[in-house]
Structure formats: C-alpha cells, structure tokens
Amino acid sequence: MAPVVDTLRLTAEQAAALLERREISPAELREAYFEAIAERDGELHCYLRTTETAEGDGVPIALKDVISTKGVETTAGSRILAGYVPVFDATVAARVKAAGLSLLGKTNTDEFAMGSSTENSAYGPSRNPWDPTRVPGGSGGGSAAAVTAGLAPWALGSDTGGSIKQPSALCGNVGLRPTYGSVSRYGVVAFASSLDQIGPVAKTVRDVALLYSIIAGRDPLDSTTAELPEPVRLPEDDSLAGLRIGVPTELNEAEGIEPGVRDAVRRTLELAEELGAEVGECSLPRSVRYGLPCYYLIAPAEASSNLARYDGIRYGARAEGSSYQEVVERTRDEGFGDEPKRRIMLGTYALSAGYYDAYYGQAQKVRTLIIEEHREALERFDLLACPTSPTVAFPLGERADDPLAMYAADLLTIPSCLAGLPGLSIPCGLSDGLPVGLQLIGPQFGENTLFRAGHALEQALGFDTVPERWR
Ligand code: GLN
Image (tube, rainbow, N blue to C red):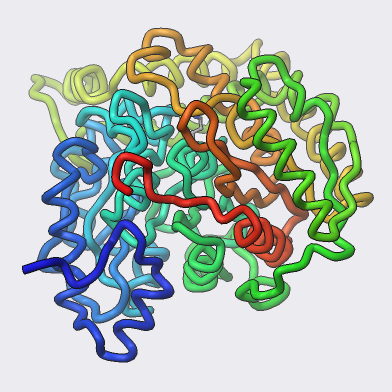
C-alpha cells in the first residue's frame, strides 16, 4: 500500500490539520513515520531507539536522548548511562505528552551533548540527509537529520553552545535556541547549567513557534525558569516593515566563513531590505575574539561538576571492582568517552585552587562584557543577523581528531548563548548543494520577533527542505 502521506514534506501543522479533519488516524500517521524510519534510518542513524508502542493521539515527535523519558532508556549518547531507564518524565517530555504528542523515539547526540557532529556519540554517528558522507552537525544531529529526512515532523534538542542551531543549519531546517530561562531543564541530562536550553527543530518557523508554545514557561521544578512576558504569536505577517536588523561585522566577516555561506547570507539580508527591513552594520568586537575561549572555560567547568554524579552507583552502567573507589574509577574510565574526559579535566583544572581566578573567574568577567555588547547592539536593532555556521556540513572524520577545528564550528553560535539570548536558524540557500543557515539573534524573550522575521524570510526565500537526492 502506498504511504498515506509524504513525511518528507508534511509539516507538523499540516499533520495536525489532517488529524483534526480525520483524514488520517493517529495510528496511520505514526505508521507513516515508522515506514520512513525503516526505509532511511539504516543509512542515517538518527534514532538511538524507537518507541513503537508509545501513546498519544496528536502529532508524533522525536526527543533528543538527553531528555528523560519515563520507561524509555535515556543515555545522552554515553556508555555510562547505558541501561538507564528514567522513572519520571522531564518537564518538556511531560508537556509534549500532555499536548497529545506521541513519542516516535530518542535521537542520537554527541556524548553528553559535547560536540558539533554527533561523531562523539558512543553509539556511532548520524549522517547528513543531504549527503550521507557528511555530518549532520551536533550535538543534536539526530533530531535535525530526522526532521529533514521525514523521520519525525518535529523534534526537541538541547543547546548549550549551538547544538540546536548548528545542526539545523547543516541539515537545512529551522531550529530555535530559546531565551535562557524560558524552557524548563528539569529531567534533562545537565551539561553546563548556566548555558543549557531545550528547544524545537522543525521544517517551518510556524512549527517551531507552535512547539515552543507547548514547552515554554515557568516550571516550579526548575528555578531558573520564568513565565513568558507575552504569549507566543504564530507568525502570519509577510512583511518586515520597520524591523531594524543589525549585522555584526565581526560575526559576518570572521575568518573561516566559507564564501558560499557569506554569499547566501548576504543575499538574504538584501531580501530582508526588499521586504521592508532596515539593515545596518554594528559591532560585537569581543564576541568572536573571546567567545570560544570563554565558553571552553565555563562549559567544561560546569560539566566537570555536573558529570561528577556518574559514579556507577546510582545511574546506568557499573563496572566491577573490589572497593567503592575502584568501582567509581573503573566505571568512569570505561563509561566516559574521550570528549567528556577531556572536558572533565579542563574544567576541573579551571576550577582548581590557585587557577580559579585566572581561568574560571576571568571567563565570567569576559562573559559579562559579551552580555554588555549584545545589549548595546540590541538597543539599536530589533534583531542581529549572521551565518549560523561558518561552513556547510563537513565530511565525517574530517575534524574527529582535531578538537579545536570541531570547536570552531560553533564560533558564531556561542556568543549569543553566553549572553542568554534566543537564536533562530533558518535555511537561506545552498552552497555546493548543501544548506546554509541564517542565524537571527533577538533580545531576551524576543522569540516573537524572531518568528515574525524568520517566517517572512522563509516565505520569500521558498527554500525546499527536501534534500535534492529525494526530490
Ligand atoms: N559544540 C559545542 C560543544 O561541544 C556545543 C554543544 C552544545 O550546544 N550542546 O560544547
């Protein structure tokens, strides 16, 4: 029997309409996704596990494997959490379930969300649907690739320094890293707590806005969350009239930005002007220069503390040993891969007595300066724009042995993450046949403005999210 729907093209909004008009049953819709998974996930490896028996009569969804799901194994891409089956749902998992969404499965991620390619997953990498010899980005490459390949209409990811925005850019779909504090992290495997955020990935800006409206808002179980100052507005207006878009020179002319990426972004900004936006230059001098080093002190420092809980006693895998000390040491030695170990060491060093002020303390001061310069730019402009990633999707293996080259993938996403600001990546063209992402950065709780601008550009660009080889 021919599939009832083409999951490569179906948006979550369209799926919801089909369900509402009873043109398709919830079971048929889920079946269509499982057929697509059977057909394409062997090649792409987006899912670490699928959940055929999950309930819910709404639009299906995939969740990154850092999000705790009651009764469904949650590994964060690490061997140390193998076999860990949470006895509770993360707040975001509970919220999507309460909205009727049904779980398709858990998606692949770099181990503990540390990476930019999913190659650090202990369970093998995911692949880019546009070109399976290339990475889908990371750490949320599984979620982003699944959405592009029609293996889920939408998904949730987590973003510490770019793990939603960058994979969306490399896979040619829409990803939102929300304002710090707008979405609960309760029940999400912690990486760097002053940076971690949960957010949606989908094929359209409207789908992203809809999913954001389901998960956002105060949660008494996460004291960093706040009530949204205004309700989420689904974008409809196709004009950018009066919108002031700032183009930070340093983020648009940084070393390492590929010419094809620069051109696609430049053309999109010209289009924004045609749609009525006022586009002007601005400067974020410290963000490119100090963003990465600042992040790679703060994030590992917080990670070294968060990852201390994996001792083999309370969660997941446990190694054999004749004493408590030996069990903990062997569990951590065998359970963690190279990247978490590297970060635990870096972070522990940066926090150690005698070095704390020079490294962690100094990084906190630099972070304050980065916050300040974003605030100044956003006093003059409603939004800032730059490429999401300096490059299009790179070949698997190309950066696997070069941590610094891997870290550079987040050069342009990290500064606004440090500043706690929301960022939306939308596909804005192709370079060498691979998608280019435009990053729009807003003020705190400025998601509605991001949605309005993103939607208007999306309509005008008419980017086809289906990879060329499947059209
Ligand atoms: N690639 C960055 C890192 O490795 C960001 C990851 C993320 O946002 N989770 O830390």
